[in-house]
Length: 395
Image 1 (cartoon, rainbow, N blue to C red):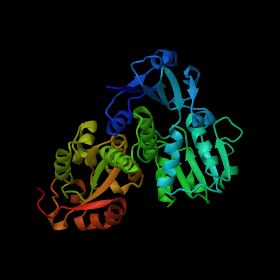
Image 2 (image 1 turned 135 degrees about the vertical axis):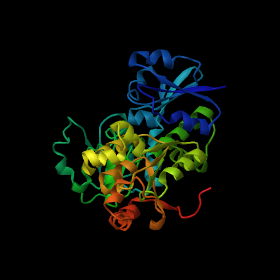
Image 3 (image 1 turned 90 degrees about the vertical axis):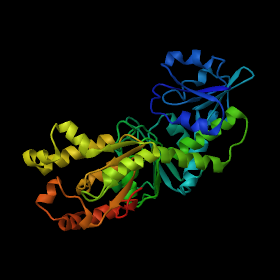
Image 4 (image 1 turned 180 degrees about the vertical axis):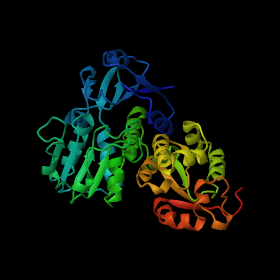
């Protein structure tokens, strides 16, 4: 069986193997290596080719025999094919990025584009934007002429592309820019695919700005790489199916709703049916604090509980592919929405108030279910992507 691999420094959270296994019948290895190990890997003839990721997209070039026109123009390589004993460098990120813009209907013609970062990924973005006839392409880096200290002179930018790892797992929740400062913004693009939606993208979504994360770029560049590996065309329909499958596999299902609505019961059933791990946030809080929820409320107060709840949600929602049952009051803190949404679809579990289980629920001792529902219903509605009616028996 043919053998290919991904070369990089840290590959523990890569999706590449899963994607390539969907595109072709070949072995695909993760080849973590320090820089000094590059020559040995590249000259290992067991491999018919490689993908290359951070931080080696420029560093592999001296070891190659030839570059494709696109790779030569950009000065970065992410795909290498061994042909007749020679190593040929390609850049399929260019195709992936342009496909992502087209797929998400983000138009850059005649617009001022701000690119965050100046590494190998940035070089691809800059070239593509110029080829797509952007009016101006400004590159912002930490130490360049245009940097984050003088970013204000570019608040008129219409498109922003994050080509840095800021906001990437496990450092979720970070962003280099405040989108509120960009009043002409008509497109926000992040090359990061883990998490599914970075803080930068979530902020753009909140303002109604067309935006997208990097998953479609990742799959599109892998599709063109696989075509080069196999010497055959892969249809766009097959590529879209892979994008859908990967996103469905990785996204969490986050259950919200009133206390006693059945989130834990339904969550366990859904996780069992889908072969996913089930997580109950209240169980994690009890384990962390070493006491029941009721005792936390009684001895430390609700505000303390909400702070712990937010921290547990933040850490849990960095993970992927889970079914997560949240406490009924998770919607009381707006910041929790971004934590839940970054890697998740949010599902409102609805149940008639007269059917809710209230025994052992701390706030049910001091508030009626009607009062709690009135306080939270708008948040349940606005947070959720869809709902489950749990008034019927769940089989």
